[in-house]
Length: 109
View: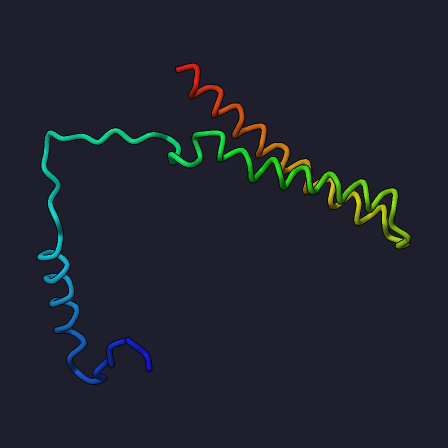
């Protein structure tokens, strides 16, 4: 059973627009002035070495798949598949390098 409201079709559409705007104005929460929150550029889980595990494992897996497609596959299109996996491995290696560089820059601060 859907959890959406049923819409009344008729002449009440003009009045619903005004009530929606009024309801949104009443529900708006004002932030106190003078207090500022300092946010880190990265989430805490992504700033440590735990954020490097996933890209490292995926990039190693992609490089392994590329080697297996190039050298161990009997498929006639093994070069095409291998080159596609090499491109994917390069992208994951680039992601790993960027994350490693960010982590090293945060540790030096």
